[in-house]
Amino acid sequence: MQVPLRILGLRSVVCAFSVIGANFACAQSAAQQVSISQPSHVLVPGELIQIKVFQEPDLDTSIRIPGDGHINFPLIGEIALAGQSVQQATRVIHDRLQARFLVNPQVSIAVLEPAKRLFTVLGQVQRPGTYRFPEQQELDLLQVIGIAGGYTRLADPGRIIIKRRIDGSEKIIRLDGKRLAKGESVEPFSIISGDVITVGERLF
Image 1 (cartoon, rainbow, N blue to C red):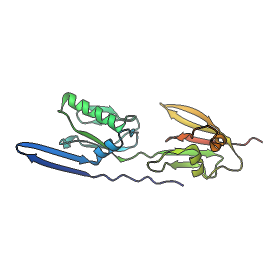
Image 2: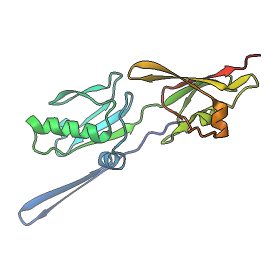
Image 3: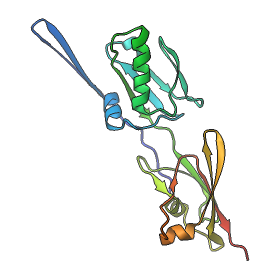
């Protein structure tokens, strides 16, 4: 079953008020909600994000993070965003703007459209192919085998190979699906976006 990815809807609410000679402004935006509720969300290439600086509309930017993970932001130039959390990226932009241009800029980042999180299952499964992660959900190895229809009669669950890219290099991970299924003091193995899982064939 391939799960469609919904695009998050966003809205902003801005209020302003004054109290005897002092002006106050409060701004609640979906971007701030993202950074508060999901400060540890790690930005990745392919995500469409919106960067806003309160009361600085000329700096508001919507951009899809390119493959190299770097974007160009007004005034401060190139910034590496991929691999940083929403909180970290917000702080970087805040600090660079504050260092030369603005006094205590109020920066917020919203993820308008998450990147497609995909995994591929090959070899001895009923429905080999590439699948999308369910929205806001993580999967372990046995779950993705189930999504691919389960093992074929020729499968050897004890011979599963996962190819994973880490820091630009490919890593090979060998797992025993039988031990995982039996829960023999083996923790569930989490699948991440980009993993290629291959189920081996029994040797007769």
